[in-house]
Length: 162
Image 1 (cartoon, rainbow, N blue to C red):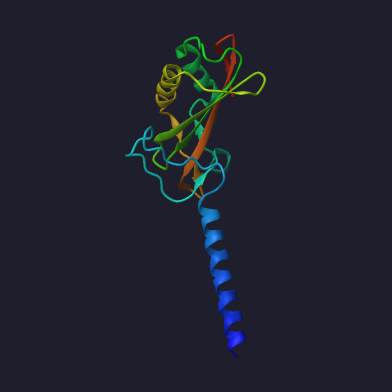
Image 2 (tube, one colour):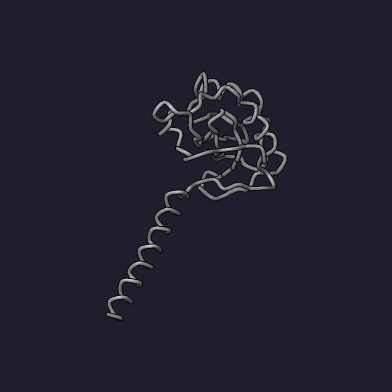
């Protein structure tokens, strides 16, 4: 009887550990942007699940053309990256506010590059100025979602937005 009780107890502990692991895995998907207290707005709030833009149909009024028009006229020539791509990933919450901006830069050889702080601040200012977001919805409910803007760079200038 004692062996059976121990086996049941161990099985119970294993089930609890698996349940905790599954719940944690669901709550924190790979690729989620965690809060950075140094750079993120403390008043930016999310609730519930954060979806990818294509899951929630999040978009910008005027689509990529409107984003292109905003970027092309405002971005000065970049010195940190001559040819390559800048990927700006961020979160749009259920109220339409944006925050948690993260920059990833690679050159034409797919090598990581760190943007100059001044250039990153300039780009951040431009992205923050985009306010015509159509909030993502799932089952007619407004939700948080990620969005990504990719800039193609040639000779230090943004030549296209994807």
